[in-house]
Each structure stands twice: as structure tokens, then as C-alpha cells.
Length: 530
Image (cartoon, rainbow, N blue to C red; front, side, top):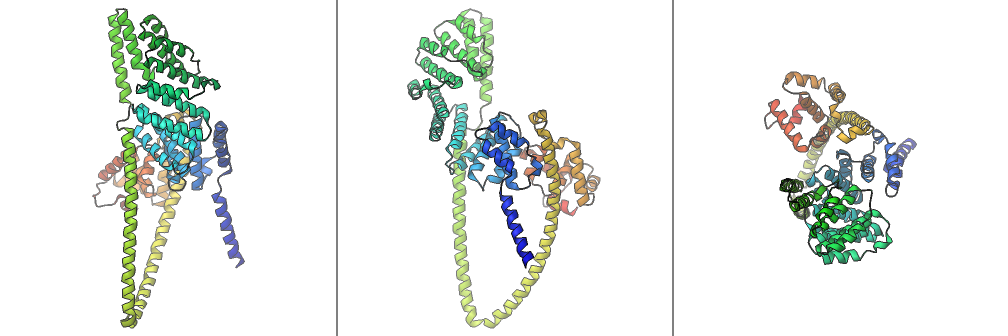
């Protein structure tokens, strides 16, 4: 009896320990907000293969992606942050919001605008229930940026205003005022300089010594006076703009001064500023248009035509990068789908309650009738039922034992494959050039060999038998079959192959054709019986 209690006590201790986060992860989490470079250094000392608890794996994935983003170290793969989004989706709204937010950041850097928009909407959905205003401010800021990139300036104004208010609640005056300047700039983009000036005047700019904020403020203020056709004043304000270490900011100041000079016909002065520009970005169309105007003024029509064509190409290039489906439309669709899900769940709950009430009334009436008239028959029936239950339990136990063995076999294989994946990822993280190019362990032929070996040991030379029966299958086809047999889902296989889910579905369809399987035949069942 004492041994029994000891086992229970040890299990309780193990559960308590497993619920506590890894000490290094806890340390990195505490450092993340104030010393994110130190947090990144701590995370680099964590061996991902040593994390066996799902909560630790998810926290590591979130913190690592957060540290990369804060330290401006960019990765092209979202496979790591997907571990966090999958784990926290229905467990922790705040961490789920952060996970989806950093997934949207990664998608944005990969120019995957639709993925970025969907991830940002999911991040906002979770964040609204947390009342974490700092997190909400980050999400609102990215939403405003997406709206402005689509020229939806009214929506951008709304979200920059929300960003400013959220930062103000957490007493982050710097970012609150920076968001106000962005809001003023958006008012300027819809040609409402008075509203823009009103927003800018709410900021006590003299209390700041930060050149980035001052640069943005004076560039916005100067733009207001360009809209009011007071070009001389705009030039004076632009010249007050301090230099920064950001070449795009400094180039934008030069561009705005040149634009003001063009408006008052001082083309030589404009040209002096334009020739120093190094980073064009979205200034490119206006930059080429100004050069066209300068050469027209010089009656150099050959160069004027050349820069007119460059302006047209630049405009086309910028618009081709914009998202095909508007962010506003996607947000409406997201909210509508969310309401549909809620309504469907309510309908399902109502239907289940109704069914349960009917079943209860039916059982009650049948039970009352049988008590009076069929007592003996019920006893006999009960005996038969009990015998049948014993038989069913025996069969169920045998089936569960069989399924348990199969699951253990699959989990063992998955553990081997995951260990290899974590090892290759860990090796890739130590090599900067591999991180830059994206992590794809399947490019290493040793990874294929290790997977085939593990499967062949458990399933009687499965890969060899499969290749002999279907010589038309290539190495990747057999690799996919091995992963399916090991219990991996299609989405996880796509992540391992570093391809999109749509591409994985195409490969799976092609695999069925090469094996000449009928549509009625389940591929996984066929592989298990092979």
C-alpha cells in the first residue's frame, strides 16, 4: 500500500515539474521586453532537442521568433512560429495573439500579403480578450501600415489613432506621439492638411531629442505646408529636419526639398538635392517625374522622355506589389466567418439539448412501462446485455491494445524523425548562410537514409518493397509514404518538405496515380497493409 502511495506522490511531483517552464526559457521571457539582445543570447544556449514538454516547445518557438524580430534578424520560414500558434490557439489568448502577430511579421517579410493579413486578424481576435494594450498597439500599428500600403488612408487613420491611444494607456509617450505623426501623415494623404496640422500640434516636439522622431515630424509638417501651397515655408521646415542614421529618412527629406523647389520653379536647386538620393522606394515615380520636368525645362526632350518612361515603370512596379484582395474586405470576411462559427455552435448546442431531452423522456416512458409489465423480461435482457458488454469490452480491449501498439510504433518513428529534424534545424541555426536561405533538412541525403532505415526496421523493409513493386516512384514519393506510415499529417509533411500545403496535396494526388490506386482505396490503409 505504501508503494502505491509513493507512486502516486512521484506522479504528482512529475506533473508539477512538467508544468513549470524551462528555467532558461523563463529567464529569456523576463528579459524579452527590456533586454531583448540578452534574451536572444539566452535562447541560443537552449538545445531545442532537450525540450520534450509541448508547452516548453511552444514557448521556445514564440520567444525565439520574438527575439529574432526584436533584434532585426529575419528568417524566411514560419515553421517554428507555427508550433506556437498551434499550441496556444485554444490555451492562452495572450501568447496566441503574440504568436499570430509574429507569424504575420514573417509573412510580411516574405511578401505573403494574404497570409500576413489573416494572421494579423487572428492576433487581434485573441488580443482583444487580454486587455494587453501594448500588444494591441503593435497589432493596430501593423494593421494601419497594411491599410496605408493599400491606399486605404481612412482606415489607416483609425488604426493609427487606436495605436496612439493604446500606447498612451501604457504610458509609452514616445510611440504614442510617433503614431500621432503617422496619423497626421495619413490625413495629409487624403488632402486634409488642417486635420493633419491639428494632430501634429498636439505633440510637444521640443521635449524630444530623438532624430528619428524629429525627422518624421518635420517632414510631415513640411508636407502640410506643401498641401497649403506655402512652398517657401515648407522648405524652411524641411531644412530644420535633423540627419539620421537611416538613409531612407534622409533621402526622403532631400526628395521633399527638391519637390518644393520644383513647385516654385527652382529646378537647378531641385536637381542638386535629387542627384544625392540613394534609396527611392515609393518615391521613385515622383523622383522620375521631377527629373522629367527638369529636363523639359532644359529642353532636353530625350532625357525627359527617358525619365517619363521610368516613372511609368516605377508606378506599375509599386502597384503590382499591393495585395490583390483588400485588407478591409478580408477583415469583413473574417468577422462574418467568426459570426457564422458562433451561430453554428449555438445551433448545435440547441439541437444537442433538444435531442437529450427527447431521449430522456423516451427512456423515462419506456422505463415506467417496463417496470409494471416486463420486469422478468427486462431481467433476462439485462443478463444478455451484460454478457454482450463483456464480449464487447473484451473485443474493445483487444482493439485498443492493437491500436496502442500501432500508436507506440508510430510515436517511436516520429520521435526519431523529429529528433533528426531538430538536429538539422539546430545545425542550420548555427550557420548564418543556411538561416538566410531557409531551412530544408530534406536536402540532406542522410536525412532520407535515416528515415528509410527507421521505417524499414519497424515495417519489414517497407521502402525497399515499395520501390520494387512500384519502380515508377521516385525517392521523394517513397519518403512521403514513409512519413504517412509514421503517422504524420499532410500539413506536417509539407512543413518537413518546406513546401506549401497546396503543393503537398498535388504530390499526394500524383503519388496515388503512380501507384494506380482507385479513388475508393484509402492511401494510408493501403500502406499499412502493404
